[in-house]
Length: 421
Ligand code: PLP
Figure 1: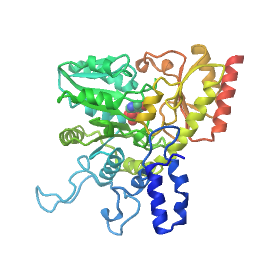
Figure 2: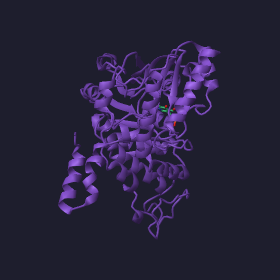
Figure 3: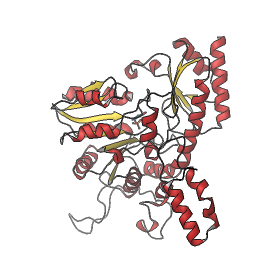
Figure 4: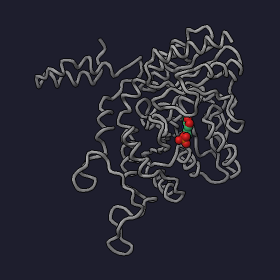
């Protein structure tokens, strides 16, 4: 049996201290490498619960749960002098806690929290000046794409949208003398294309004045940690998997680069797109179950993907955990697993897609992803401003945490209804 490093460590501890519990080390630790993906660090679960949030750091009495610091201002000992905090747009104990927690999960020196994923993304674009150039991808979250085309462009920050980012050479070719940022989403939304972060980081590193930023929203730091692979900045829409309960809008930026952090921190305070302390509390609470949720999203997502792959009404399924995915090998090398995101192509066109979502009884037609509930979206049928250049029969599923048998039965009956309509 393949034994992970963690299993070996646990077994050695068990032998040394005669701990019967660790007799099960093989079972405990071999489950850390799942479906052929990279070996996960099991202590991630401990860090998310205890890391950067010791009870002693808050008010009297050592509360185990992080308090919500609603105050907007802090008493000064003298004019021009401050204790730990000044004014809550600049710094707030609840926000600082989640910033430190997410930083530790992504393996970053610094974390910065924003009022939404888009607030975090546009702060990164604010690092640039008129005349600068960005390299990104055609397959990109609609909000990011619209900002680059309709806002950044107006400010004379031009973007090259590379058609196929799965080949790092295409990204290299798009980099010009004015390029200051390479912005990639991996896996991408909605095409689930994978970018080889290590290779692209190598290309970007040859130029001292270019930064590589990765949108890690689809996997969360539990399944992918781009800083480990050479990225300079990581963005997570915490609205999705990090929070996991569809009741918080937040974004996070993570970096270990001192200079980049200073500039991002300045922009965070100056632009002021910060989350409320209550949202920070909810995010911190939601994150506690991230490893458990992500493992179940992976199990449910893979089962649904395999079901769809064998269904006569389905043309093609995209899931990086399936051997049929064009970058299955890269996904397994780069990631610790895959979330509940599944993209598939229905046989037919707009009418069949409409009939399919109308027939669903458990899966909800709705925006977003990463919550406990399963959601479905047809990107080609979005309101015009948000429409991406995607095939009409592409369906994006965010597989939730319901009993997977119920999900498959629901998809099956909706697909049958399409055939008989
Ligand atoms: N990045 C990706 C991949 C997304 O899917 C989204 C939202 O759906 C965002 C960024 C933006 O996040 P938010 O909605 O929190 O602003």
